[in-house]
Each structure stands twice: as C-alpha cells, then as structure tokens.
Amino acid sequence: MGDILLALSIPLIVCASGLYALAETWWLRRHQPAGADDGRHRTPVVVREAEAVVAEAYERLGTLYEARTVHPAGS
Image (cartoon, rainbow, N blue to C red):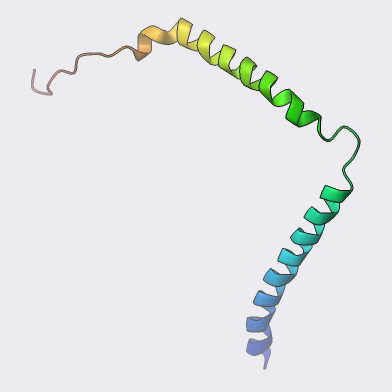
C-alpha cells in the first residue's frame, strides 16, 4: 500500500504545483504594482546601450575577428 501512495503522490505534487503556478500568474497579472509597465518602455534604451557596447568592443578587438589563412597541419 505504501508503494501505491508514493507512486500516486508524484502526479499529485506535479498537478498541485502546476495549479499553484497558474493561480500565481493569474494573481500577479491582475494585481500589478504601480510602475510595473515601466520595463516595456525602457527596453529600447537597453537595446541601444547593448548595441553601443558591442560596437565599441568590436571596434577595439575587430582585428581578432578578421579572417585568417588556415595552414595545413603538416606545414
């Protein structure tokens, strides 16, 4: 009997955690704190800053990325 309860407890835990995640998501969507939408407005700024960092890094280290001739192992 103990093995059956153990075997049935695993699907029960999985279903319970799924229901909890669903309820938590529903709750958070309906009860957002003030200013929660600010992240969507800042995204283009963050992308531009990241592009500037990558461009600067490529400018400094661009010579490392240039195509190089590959020599055969025997020569």
